[in-house]
Image 1 (cartoon, one colour):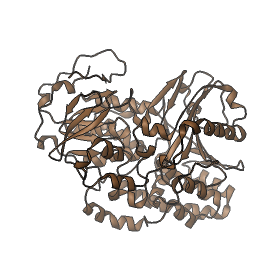
Image 2: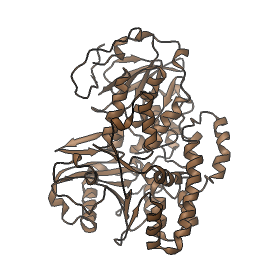
Image 3: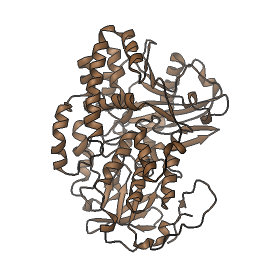
Image 4: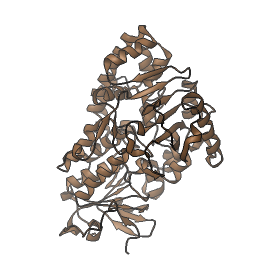
Length: 530
């Protein structure tokens, strides 16, 4: 059957197939999904000697990092905070290239401006002296505690990130080996509890505990191991990829194409084919069958197991186990462009609402859509004029909301919720801005479920609690199916660009060597680029 989907070429002139003799004898890997994790996995598979086909449901690559281009504006749909650039650089190095020759990363200072309900602001940066002065402005008595907290965060960065982020946690032995480090990090504590041990001022407790919300975690229940994010940012900075986060996605795709491998868009996988408890390929919604020697899913793991694999093949990831899993929060995101610029709005702003702990309890525990909210306001045109028409600004504003287990009917609730956010922004920071809007659209939890195929419309996979982290999170190597692997936000170590790229590194440690496989006789046409 001829493929009904397009082969990804970035709208470049059609090229002749890459000469590849004996491709039918080369081990073939299918990667489902083209998010950061899937693309990083494809690069590592290609470097390992696999022939790779990446299959993407949408009309363009990126998954949750999809790019919307409307009215001259560039709207990055998903991750916008680039940390740990060395993890990206590794992928270019694997392909014999230098990332800086292809991607320009711009360091941001400050990283974020955190605005509280009373209008006071904290500028969060990587400069220890500036940070001490900011802490002192709010509470001089907390300066010593702030410095002690960062020492604790540094230890968690060393043990939790440098030692464990690329460990696959494939066996109980992997868990046992990590236990001494988990004990040293006191991983059973929440990050808010850790911060509160050192810092007394309520606003400063928010400043130093909000980071897990960027990867789907409740600061009052997520493990304090995630204090590593504070240290990671200080050591390696927060950056913006010029041209948008999509520039990174395009750069990773170029690496895959340069390896002689293929990315196909509008190629939705409807089933992972299983024979003798082994993944042998996929079936697309078009009816096309593609054989493979291994299958790697960058799709949401709960969705993968529940919807792409028949229940008779699943002993571990049963429907009942999936239903019992705690899902992360979801997101409401309003994208808009304005014909006026707002220089008082920084690139990254966190706008705190009137409640902190109780709002998070509404989102994560009660699954209740509250009337108040805290927001992340993103203005990339503050750093990068290319993402908006001349003299215009590009924005998105993101509100953490409950996943679809809340029962909210977003078809009727989306517009009133957007209007409430608009009133908040108008009153707090951008008076009269709605009169200048020239482009506007929203994403809701329903879009995460229906467009991105995320279980319960959760934006970050399983909630990253202690008992849903490391060995307790869905494994990189499937517990149920041979030659089936997982990568991305819903596997170890979790969400965020560093997390999903590290998951591809962890995946590599459990992949079979392609030379050890009994190679299936797959058509060489799957390995050509046209």
